[in-house]
Length: 343
Ligand code: ADP
Ligand code: MG
Image (tube, rainbow, N blue to C red; front, side, top):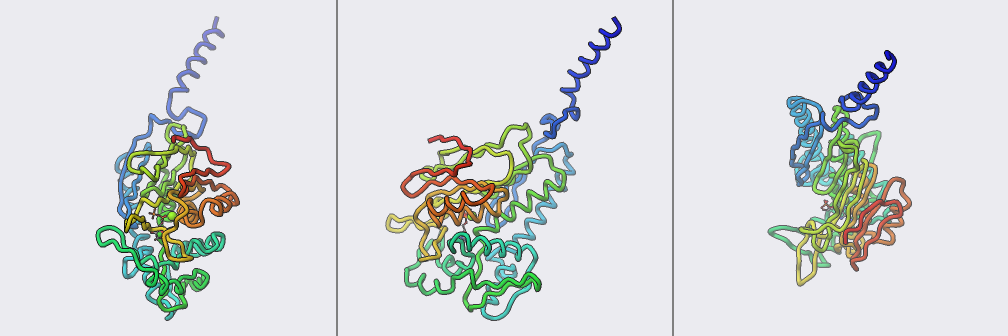
């Protein structure tokens, strides 16, 4: 009789334990303990939206957001091509004159950009700035003539960039050369924010800088994150795919993000360094990668490389997947990509 009582009590305790927070033996936090918090920051000409699910209280969360904000603003001041005293502007202004001492983060991003530039056959080129600056989008939109572009193209060559890790300097040897980190810096900044949140003990969350997305751990309820991918031909209203991820990063580059139409032709902001013209073989490239910097760089690079060469590069890289919508409206998925076709 006694032992039966004991068994009943044991069973009751076990049953209770499975509902009590903290008693679950897996690493997924109990969703009931987590509260959703959201904050938007403005950096790198983009809204960076951060959503957290955490058991921390309001004042802890406020403190975390303010630390993230400080760090994002610091990085913006280093990387922005439009702030006169950013590292990027200082390096560009000293082109042909002298090497410039920069922050470790600047060295890291530039070195990564140069390492991958080789793999992209030069299609990803951070010295494209003199050509990029000829295009303006928005209110005073303007498309340059081929003659204007041809005058600037000799200044575009990433292989000339001299990075001295020991001295902490970067040098552009030709006068008139300039840097633009627009195809990589946003991803880097997203990674920094994500790592910070993780280090500060946030259980789970998302950092989204206008489509450059990175995840702080698995989702709060243990199910995969689901990311909808815009149909580039109807980007305001339609998604053509859903990708499920447990973590890591996902970034999409599209020809619909920044462009100007002239004589029925769309001129957008992803440029082929070969001729200085907008890259024409893709409409949208989505990259899944372990971190957002790599995904950001590759989304731009693969867009320029085109579906064949771009997909070959993706297949050669560990932990990297791609979903490409090409100029003929064909969709290409890399071999390891788990995706739902919504067309
Ligand atoms: P977005 O910034 O709109 O998310 P991308 O990640 O594709 O889009 O980056 C586009 C930016 O990358 C451009 O605005 C420009 O600053 C830069 N860029 C454009 N073409 C190239 C290229 N071939 N190589 C390196 N950077 C580029
Ligand atoms: Mg990019």
